[in-house]
Length: 108
Length: 113
Image (cartoon, rainbow over all chains, first blue to last red; front, side, top):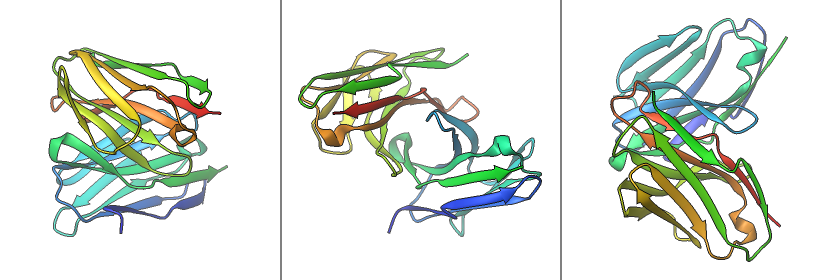
């Protein structure tokens, strides 16, 4: 079993839909990161969470430390949101352990 | 501001040839530096990390090596590439003072032929 599990693996949505990507982890962490990877491969940090909830524009990330679970929500999705979304947990040594990623495609 | 430069962006190398990928960081001092690899169809995996000059920790045994000759320079090398070394290589640094913690390089797509 992977230490970081993401679901779904693939997600297709219509423009305007509310999207949720889930992440569960099984190790002790100091923080959880949500990342976005575009087709060229470059990675952008979206959120760093150690508790509660954060919001940037149409993106919302939540974490439940007791349940070892995090969700990334996208409100009013748009085709430009199409990308791979990666959950990663920060462990000792400030190292990241990554989930396999969720491939999101938003159709217009 | 904190920036990270990684080059080259794309590389095609024959089996058995050497490799050198370079990463430099600006806007921070004494960062934790990391090399990650993403093989085709797979998630990112930590290869090496460094907490200071000359200090390298390896996570995955393989024919790659890393060096940190200067505080803000991190180099990934191989003496002889294997086909299995193909993948997408990312350099990153961690700064606890930075809002998102991590900053990632733009990556190097390596194809070994």
